[in-house]
Length: 301
Image (cartoon, rainbow, N blue to C red; front, side, top):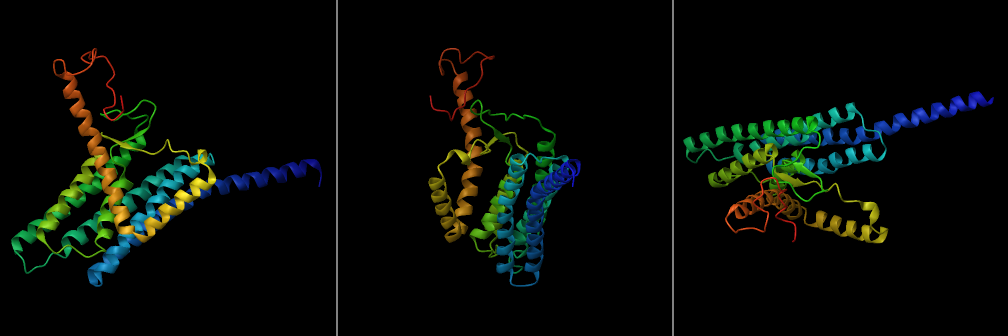
């Protein structure tokens, strides 16, 4: 084999390796879709019997898909294999796994199993409202993804610290995690009381609203795991995995609530800070200047 043939063979090997690197992020996206499909199947199976087990597995599948969604983008950026195909596939996967699957799970768990022996008219109203609010959640999630795909350097209405990156609106995996972690917290036992169904209705609607809002949510993109010492990183991962597996229902539910209320608190604190600065003598010198940048209310002085 002459030198030209060896160079051509080496170029072919590199091209095959490059194609394999492009396939790697798509495999994680496929895992995301698979988890969403499994969740939908389990939710449908819950209607015919053994509802607790099937609904709990449906919720766990959605929670299991969240790291797949987080890893496919990171791997694509790390390997420099980002592509328009991968972005579109990821968005379609998110619509299925974090849009359709949680909205169906939210309806079946929160409203389908309401006892018919109760007030028939009240049950009918709750079921109809549940259908509508779960549909609004789905529309909110799809709109959130569409806005994310077309936005370039979008800024929230309540800007945070300079140099930090934030999500504009609650990301759809976090909203889906909020619904799935709630179902898993109750071990998939369907809602039987009308007042619990009413609270669930408000929570589903709140998740849909936060996705289409322009409030800031922590993105976590500034975290660089390569800066940590290997032993410390392994120790932290081991502790988190133990707590996550041993107390999964409490861990995921508490984490979802904390993340949701962090965005609400950031918006409320920003609005309160603006009103305070607008009062006469209520802020530091120059705070009344309309052209001055507004500081982050959560940033220490």
